[in-house]
Length: 365
Image (cartoon, rainbow, N blue to C red; front, side):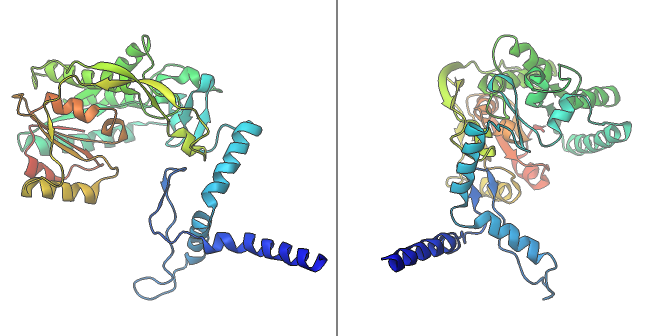
């Protein structure tokens, strides 16, 4: 009997050791749903010249750590214990603020909000030179250029950060806007002031996400349209919308290691009463738009690449470059209702071939 029990214990022990290895992930480029990132790829042992890859040991360890079987279950369990038992609600990516408000800590967010991130004349001048070059290149093609400056949650809600000297102050986005307005004639849309004003009435950022909510997004949209009217580029009012109650689980739950850690958050979702814009899908696109979609897929940093046609308005054609702040929250749909043709690309660089194909009247970055 004892011998049988020992064999069972040995079998169970071997199963515990081998199961994670047997179930290791072999899918290249797999995205972790709980951490919102791409897992490490299997390393190349040799380079193109068949020389041994000097980093193969570290790359193999990273691949093994990321892809070992049952990893996500272990990560989620460990995160639940940290959050609910030990009370650890922050990590190197996430800061737990006051009243259930979380902040993204990377990209110097908290340092910027505290006013400690260094921005010198050399950096500002580099930005000016770059922006002037973009504006000039588009101007020579008869295209207006507009620079939109979004702002981080930490600059709008600094009072919700737990520790340190945080308050509403000038941050990098203000310094850049001030410098460009003093030294150039680039058309700049400042969003910080509009968001701070709207914040007095309603919440403009999600508590459990780094992004603005749809009240904040609509505020940003209206500010862009109002500025375009002021500059004489447009003669249309912002699209009127209604709002309905909705629920959303913010991205910080996944960043903390478990998608179930934080509760869904209530917010007001935009409803556009009558939509006239028609999205051009990849499947129905003609040769021109198919090529645009090909370029978008090659260069895009995010998933949202959209092309719209709106036959109901006689307004400029707009090509917008941005990131996740503008890719969602009904912002592309709002812009599409305002312009005769609207294209959105989640990418860093303005691609000249896309400009040649779409022939926009305005490029918004």
